[in-house]
Image 1 (tube, rainbow, N blue to C red):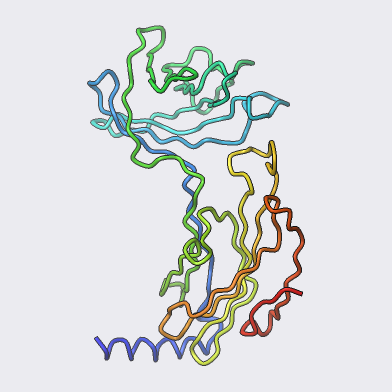
Image 2 (image 1 turned 180 degrees about the vertical axis):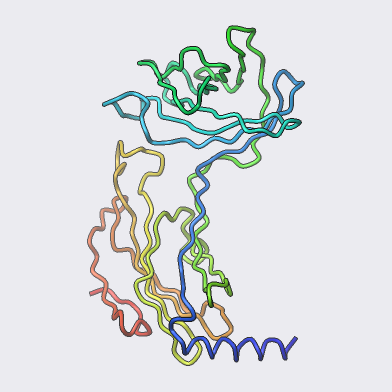
Length: 273
């Protein structure tokens, strides 16, 4: 094992001297989708995947009380074929429907009406306001209860990582959520990266919405929490130093904090002006 590690660090030192052979890149996986499994009428096993959008289903009208678009699919577990879903969600008390999903007759050509409904839909899934029970209906047939349990719940969190690639191969991964103590990171930019004697020095910027899920409405609905950070990664690929400075915030009213750094010498770190 020790011999393997020695060979690896020789390999690391060799490629660290060739800037074009290694690179750090950000990678973000968002959790803003849901996967659930259950049954229709306690008999037919199904699986459902949904993504909620900030896109309003009513033209020229958008607020927290306006139904917003939902896209996805469901399938019968025995069949395994995905059936497209299009619909809308609305969580305010004044909403007429909490969730409504349609199976279009032709999923490549459909038009929602002024109520965000799809006339002549083949199938409909519905949850009424203030309720958790979903119902499924085929055409004008009898509504049947749907029992679903979350496999992957919808969440305003993300998995943000910084990857070390050598010749395009992932050699190491660094969890930016853990380093920064931020559950949601939506954008990451690597401003500078440099290797000195086998260790790596990075200057990065990252940010997230001040009020996730607001759709741009309400207090800090369009606000951003932004940070600049310095990372030093030791030769054994462990994080030796992580320093961050918040440069913009709607929540704390701290805006436009100036940070100094040298893109040509990222090893000098960051500091407030």
